[in-house]
Length: 346
Image 1 (cartoon, rainbow, N blue to C red):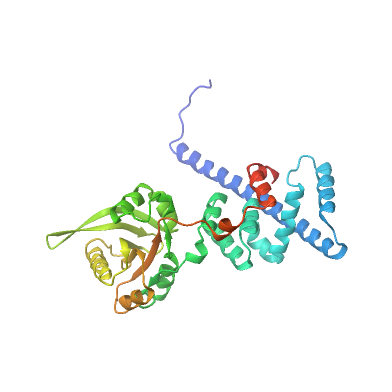
Image 2 (image 1 turned 135 degrees about the vertical axis):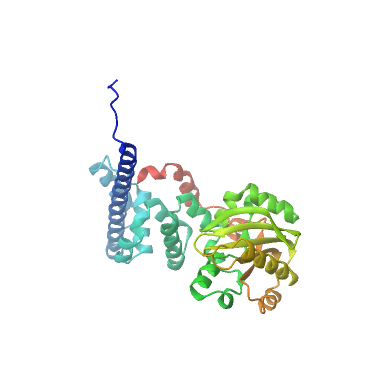
């Protein structure tokens, strides 16, 4: 064991900085390798598409190509017939080379395969691709967001933000709220009461934060407000880091009623007066109810000056229509079985 010697006073800080630089260099190197791999796969896929169009290549040619490439590059994985078909689909899904270089190449290969498998339109693929890059989603997180229909729900809550908030904050606030919110992870039946739902959301606060979306930080449950000597309790309180404001969430187990907004507005006023900091923006309120009549909700929001939104929640979701009516295809079964080992082919 080497003799211990006195260390300079700044050694620990310098070592920590050095570790950070090494980790950053490793990450940049990994990203660079991934980028080159993705671009190579796109070029191979484009060539296959071109030759199929000109020469009528079939499945047997792709199988022969896979065999020859694996013989030529025995140490390089990723040249299975299945992966070559993904390369062709990749080039078909994103024919623009510049977009592939600037955006698609930022994602790992199997993230891209997931986008190809699970989404049918360029608009959907590009939206989820951009969100994955922005939020650094893992592959499993990407799958969850697609399967829960994030795109269809994003920004769909009924709000008065356009008239109650300045434009940049209004756009971001509206984008941050969904409709409906899915609470499948709670394992509750549709008959659950407000306090059951609230307790389960706190118990599963990590999943709840994922469903709320980027930027939300949990503050507390049944947060006490003392107003004129009377005590009031907010169901759930959050802080939104990008909006720089508190977000009050009230749960209603039944259908929406206009008087619910009066209670919510009272809480917003109390938070703004007693908790909001000097640099915080006005508090936002979100009313989560089991059902809502859109026309009634629009009327109820019509004269409100405080920023509020109304959205439904779903405790139990039925199976997607495709699963209700169709058995999986042979290709889907093979793909599912191959997913466990698919990562090795990259």
